[in-house]
Image (tube, rainbow, N blue to C red; front, side, top):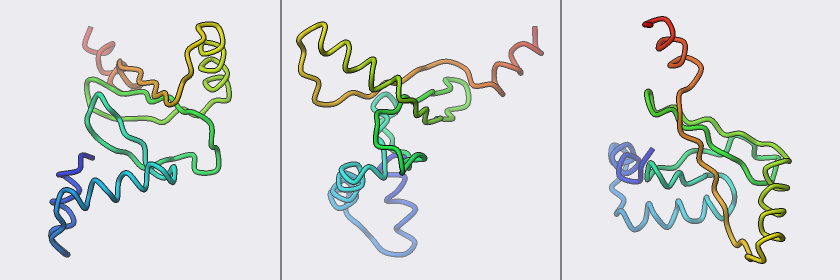
Length: 111
């Protein structure tokens, strides 16, 4: 959901300026309750609140579904790449684009 979508949803209850929405989203991101999906300019609720490692996001280019993938190996890969390259990683978001299971099945059925 984008910030303006969120503003439209909340406007039924109370008007909130876009800056207020963005500040709230920034705080939710800092608290690890929300993730920003940069390629979609959207935000999703964290589905793995008890795990504080990095996540990857599988984004279906057909239906727009976003799945959060939490795996300890993701953190390990980022750390290894950082160490090998000498690059100090301050933040990393891994976005995987493709087709979800449902859309892949529809594509195969259509062939």
